[in-house]
Image (cartoon, rainbow, N blue to C red):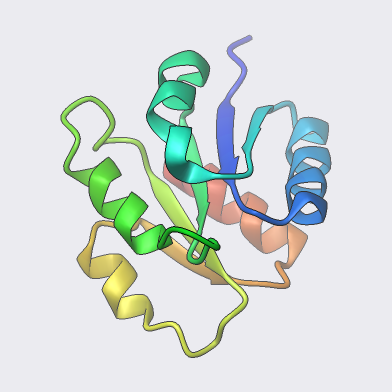
Length: 121
């Protein structure tokens, strides 16, 4: 059986642990990253099937990270779901930069599982 791999990039440790618990229980291999500055090294190692990426970080914008991912020849095909707790975030910007989906915190467990499953089929 092939195990699906997910990379979660968020600066909230509690959120990372929650996502880890949810997807590990569904048979995923979960890689957690607190800061996106080393995302390309992590991608090389983890080889995820999908990325959950927070919109905001103390020193970076999730949109900047998304743009770098989607313009990188080796990683541009990995689906990315943008995650935010800020309802003022313009999700059109996320889609325009190549996001495959966008969700708001707090996440509904069944909804995020369904969205991830749809994108990795």
